[in-house]
Length: 216
Length: 304
Image (cartoon, rainbow over all chains, first blue to last red; front, top):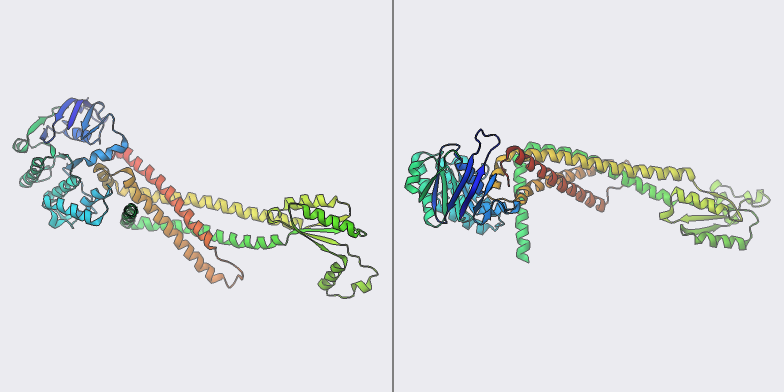
């Protein structure tokens, strides 16, 4: 499902020689993998290379049928729709309601039929337990609720891969645990889940495998 | 087929809604753009209205243009008929009419209000005249001048007259009007693109965060850009509509002071609105493309 082959990455502004140095990694379909490491270890960079927000300087990354060395600019949106993404800061569009945030993902793929959108969005919001607050704006929800909404948005295309970058970083322990349970449920339903986190406890409790990145 | 068109219609409605939402999120910038573009378009439409009426007037005058060919005294009927045939055969000529001496005298008497010229004078002093009407395509000063020189060389022709100076002045005036229109249209286009560009750039910058999110969740470039392009077109079309309404209001108020003044014909209005829409589409596409690229380079946030 995901392969990193001799991947190197350097940021021009960074003091480090390499943010990621010769990373080789293979993640199978259906795994729930935790990427661990200190700040600057390259966890987020590795996630960004999967979705092609960043390109490797050397080596290549294969993910969900695309490879960083052959993908075209036109194919990047297709890749990103196959990777659901969840972030520490939720990244919901502030001036759209929760329903609209999720519906937007469907509409951008050409699904504009109101009844189809209503059914799909309602189903996914039910599954993440936030349907009752669908008409609220992000700032009207707690952090945990916003993260549930973000997971709902990530799931709307039923992606085979879910990437979560510090999904519990802005949440208290209990709420973070609820989010982890939700991610575990997705993993058990067959979705490959990759979580980048500092939280060793969650990694040990929920992960099928942990990978630790150290100093690139 | 219907479902395909239905899908396109739904997509169009969706983009209009998104465009309207982006304009509502930035009401002051949108209003400022509409006002500025409206002012530019009002000036352009005013010039179009004036040009339309000047050209109408000029066409009327042009119809009166032509050549008057005076024959020498003593030219017989045969030669006169030959000359009629020659003049009629010119490709530039639409019609040739002979005014014989008796008719010329009657016309002169009528114009002067006298009825005894023939009696007072021993002989009719007036020559026969051919009045040559030109085709529309050949009614310019250059052609008239060339033809007059050519006709003057025929045996039996005494003189050829035409309003050389005012024909040239009219042609010059029409050329000035046409060039002014073209120049104003060009300046208006540049002004619209500039105003629209600044407004859309501002709107794009204010949407930096949502744009980054849209890119990240898999929105295509076209999907991201379309609402901004439609917003640009909406600004232009609304501004054009308002400018035409204001122009009509002004025309309605002064119409009775300037009898015979026409408003812009429907075709001109359609071309005006269509032209503005095309400038809006082109300007918006260009601006949004540049603005999003600049944002990508500056922030590195929505790299493809």
